[in-house]
Image 1 (cartoon, one colour):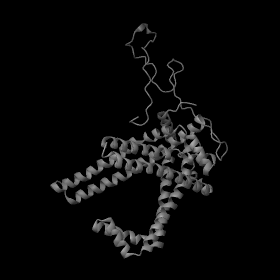
Image 2 (cartoon, helix red, strand yellow; image 1 turned 180 degrees about the horizontal axis):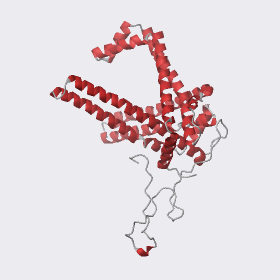
Image 3 (cartoon, rainbow, N blue to C red; image 1 turned 180 degrees about the vertical axis):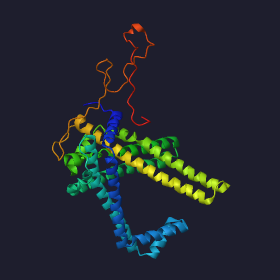
Image 4 (cartoon, rainbow, N blue to C red; image 1 turned 90 degrees about the vertical axis):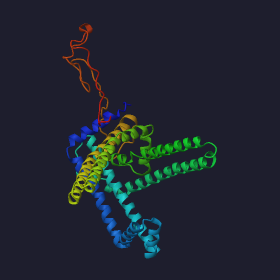
Amino acid sequence: MREYQRVLLKLEAKRALKAAGTKPILVTLLFFLSTAAASALLGLVFNVLSGSGAMLAAFQSCLTEYGDFTYALSVLLTRFSPARVLTALTSLLLTNLICGLWRSVVSVGYHGFCLDLVRGRELRYDTLFSALPQWNGVLATRLLVWLFQFLWTLLFVGTECVVVVVAAVLLFDLLPGLAAVLLIASYAAMLVGMAWAMLRYAMVDFLITDQGITGMEAIRESKRLMRGNVRKLFTLHLSFAGWAFAALGILYALMFAVVLFTLMLSWGGITEALSTLLAVLVIMLWFPLMTALYLWLYPYITSSTALFYEWARQWGHSGPDGGRRQPVPPRNFTYTWNPSPTSGTGIGPGPRPEDDGSDPDSGWPGGPPLPPKPPKDDPWE
């Protein structure tokens, strides 16, 4: 098995994105627009059929006026019958469920597009909807994954609740310090367990689009590929956190600008019309910035995960043969540097003739070579 190198894997994903031009961004935009359009259309239909739009507006009005959730809910139940409220809640749940299932089908196609991207294949826009012929298998698989994730989450949350009760009843009066340590450790263990439960099914969409397997077969194969690799995938996803912090930094900087404009208005430094105009301009600047960042970041993350799938399938484990896509030749994720004058390749600057501060008897005409710089992908790597 080849050594897993996260930074080089991400560099490979960035090279694939750069070579593909604007297609990954356009397909990502199409992916989000298709899911948003489905959500809006279903929401409109269910609002008309159940009248949930009027009830939601009345609830928000009461909540804004009185500021009390319980009182606003009681007013809603008084103004509308419980049966109508139950119908509206049911329609809302159905809307979310159907939209989630539609997103799952399109997401499989999007994972297939990113897999073609990192494999250097021809990129097609219709790959986004390539899982529609398998929609029944995809939906059954997604429902099973949701069920297993829910059961694991229920187990970890239930265990955390038991620990909280034990700490509160037995330890707080006798050993409050030990109780606090126990609560923090159990909460951290719960978060780790929930992350483990989510990541062990992370290869399901790739297996559906790559090998054509669905249901329990895809789930078992995903768990097998992730055996011993959950920590690697977790650190891969965690390495993108810097982009989230950068987005938050931009958001807070723009929010600070809006607050500053408001303070300048109160101090008499600018007029109200100018303050409003500046605030609107800040909001208009923030939205395209965040949209552009996300349209680049989402295919970057998914392509990196696709390369992780390639590594887990080809280097670490060999999955079942078959499927609508054929296996591809393995990629070489190992980059080395050879300092010899005729065969230097890979990462590293190599010897520089202008370096002359070394011992002339060392055998290096220009001094010893500088050590190769470690590969770097994102600025915080």
